[in-house]
Image 1 (cartoon, rainbow, N blue to C red):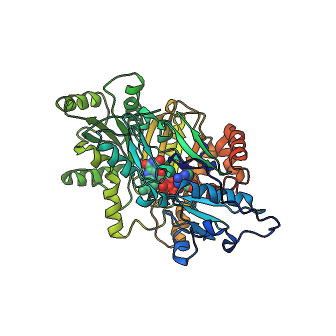
Image 2 (cartoon, rainbow, N blue to C red):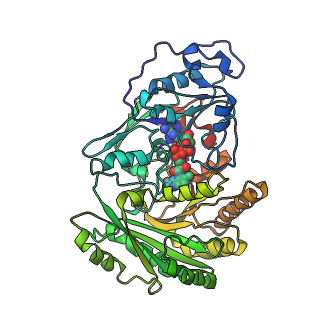
Image 3 (cartoon, rainbow, N blue to C red):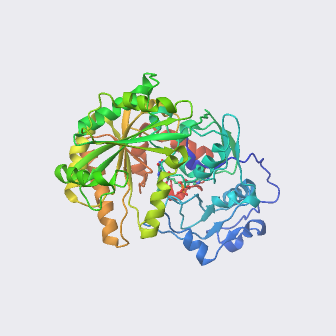
Length: 494
Ligand SMILES: Cc1cc2nc3c(=O)[nH]c(=O)nc-3n(C[C@H](O)[C@H](O)[C@H](O)COP(=O)(O)OP(=O)(O)OC[C@H]3O[C@@H](n4cnc5c(N)ncnc54)[C@H](O)[C@@H]3O)c2cc1C
């Protein structure tokens, strides 16, 4: 899915190109907002406050001030803007901005226009999330939390989510949308029935494939602790194998965390009286590992849930007695990271730089990764990493025709280093340097990795990331966005 060539919309609005294009033949200088035809100019914001807001993102690492911010009221406005840029001798770039939860400037441009997609969600602009029997039709600007609320009213929910719900539909579909359910259903991009997209030429195009619906009321959520890496990964892989064997006992969500001996430890999930014992374990081993396992249930399955969970745990090799469980509503579970967000915001830890690193790692070298990266770099250097997530998933749930890339093995691991840093430049650089060191280590010892939400700076790095898919990506860009107008902040072609 070459989403970087297009803007996700879901509104079925037909192309209407009557009064938009003023061909400015003879222009040889870069575009100036003051030259914009009136109809479009009315939707450009040029004030410093708006420009400043559009020049930053969740990462607080890259800062680029655009020439203007475009506030569309409809998909036609977006089409008009793109057509107008295409008509200029020197087209300006257009950076789509959803919730700007990117970490390395992916929603920014310094010589063009930031397209504020959230404007399409304003009620007066016809915001919609329409729920049907087997699918939901949502605008690209909509938040996943709102999709959940809307579908839940109908007793339905999509199969594939991200862990955090205040992200836009278009923003996560531009990447993949990964979490601990994808071993069963694939990433979000594998669960899209149809997309309406506007290309870099300003054409509105429909593209397809799947649908999903389910109904749950509650979840049983468990965490199991390990001091042995191989026992941890063997058990994770065992848990994701149930679904592959069509064994109905399969867990619904399998994830994992790495608890590194770095203060402060986040042990909020665990019962207070157990926290000192867990802290002792972490101090003793330096790193311990935790599987998160979730089983959904409803009124009908409620009576069996305990037996089902017991049967899943049978034969697992976690540290005896270090298994903890919680019952939550389905919505509480889906929206669990919002609680963290509120807590971090109140402590001033949310709006800070986020030098994140997200990796997909080949399974066959995962113990080398543990020794070389988790123990050899992260534990040794003691640069804070928070509580990284770490779990295996099945590659057969990914559609190889899409532009998302994964290691070339049936199972690969997903690592999320959710770093928060102070505003001190030296601190941010230390985090970024460690990220680079991890990437370099993998390269040096030949561990195949793919960066997720990649923040590469050069064309060559992107070519390496896409590997054998590069030609396809280049061809799609040339076909759908030949003047390379869209998504300059990804730095793939600009
Ligand atoms: C707290 C937190 C938790 C996260 N958890 C997860 C997780 O569990 N799983 C996961 O996969 N990711 C996760 N992410 C990463 C997240 O999916 C990406 O950062 C995603 O891009 C965020 O969506 P957004 O709306 O903020 O997109 P933005 O940052 O606004 O945009 C991202 C990219 O998408 C493009 N874009 C945005 N909207 C559109 C549109 N309508 N049409 C076309 N292109 C568009 C932008 O130009 C940009 O290139 C998390 C991020 C944060 C901050």
